[in-house]
Length: 72
Image (cartoon, rainbow, N blue to C red; front, side, top):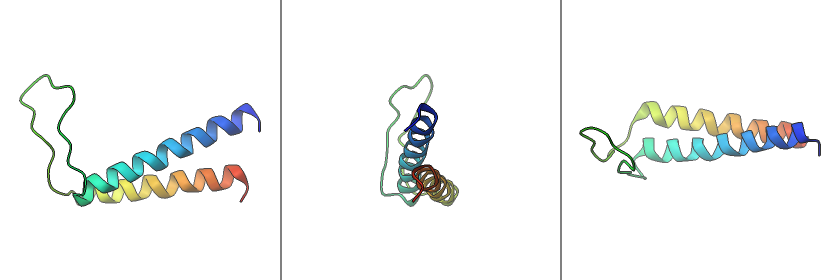
C-alpha cells in the first residue's frame, strides 16, 4: 500500500468510528458528561434526531471510503 492509500484508509476508519459514536449518542444509547468544561456544563442526555442522521451519514461515508480504498 502506498502512503496516500494508508492515509485515506485511516480517514475512513476515523470517520466510521465517529459516525458510530454520533449515531449512538443521537439514539440515546450513550450519555456523556463533558470532560473539559469552562462554563455551566451539563451532561448530554436523551436522543437527538439530527445527530442520528449525521452519525449514520458519517458512518456510511467512512465505510464507503474504506471499501473504495481497499478495492473490494
